[in-house]
Image: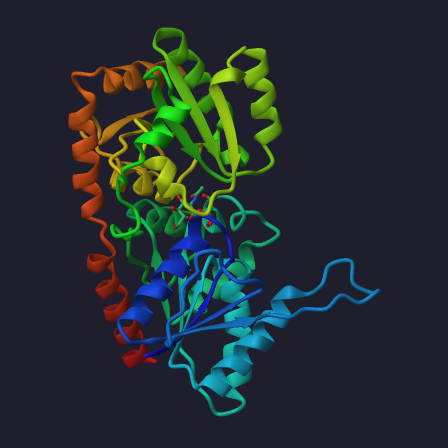
Length: 374
Ligand code: GMT
């Protein structure tokens, strides 16, 4: 197949899923054309089947906001025509699904029919998409897609609940490349961060409000009061400086490091003992899956798609959103040296169920079905 993938070139979330999917498809022999405004960070290897098309959009004194969606639609038209694509797969509904709809209509006037698959990732439905300023366009473009997938059962339910959807939604969960995400021997690294044998706790996110970074700090402060512990905060975003101030107030700054965005997050996860994801909403929780693949158990909230990933009392624990005390208790239980190894083993076992080799055929089969009916 000759597939166009449209995504955000982000370090985590939908951008990573789209990029890893494209790389895996290319390795299977499909031709994959990425269409986005900058090179996705994980598009980091050369393969004769991988192509990158940059959306160039120009400002003009009249525009307070350059019309990215129009530039994207125009780029899709040109790539579909010139590269003779069989299918467009857009990740994150806003504005990719509506731009794809526009491209499809334009291509029709050139006598070209291009099937469009939209993958819903989470905040495009649960936060941004629901907003009245976007809702009509999101509903319309989901209904006009030739195929729609969601990354969890919960997101599928939430989409039907929040929008008037007439289309079928297929659930294809997120996946992990276990060749890349695996526990590596990094003893020197662990020794450098935890010189006195402290437990190592990790959080990675885009530090948005929805991630409840404040809860991460509070859970850690409670654990720290009970046992020697260190916290690594990976990623960056609007809540970071507030979280840093919170650490100063709680007088735990000496044991917390903010590392910013990392290319090789698996190296840090390799030495971690526990991963914290107390999010307000989380359609799947890819970052938690990455941790589990590196044998790290997870304390998470019980929201969204997290119960489809994190198994209560097996791979970690879940608590109601905001219940910092319960999360602390459960974290201390996992970190008990009599329990930790079992949770680590279970986390890896569960992660294997989401191995890319199991999920890739689901996308390939779905593309085939969508192309046949279009
Ligand atoms: O986590 C984020 O806020 C980023 C966001 C995105 O779209 O990039 O992530 C969403 O998509 C990921 C990949 O499918 C899911 O694993 C995340 O759970 C989801 N985030 C939320 O629902 C908050």
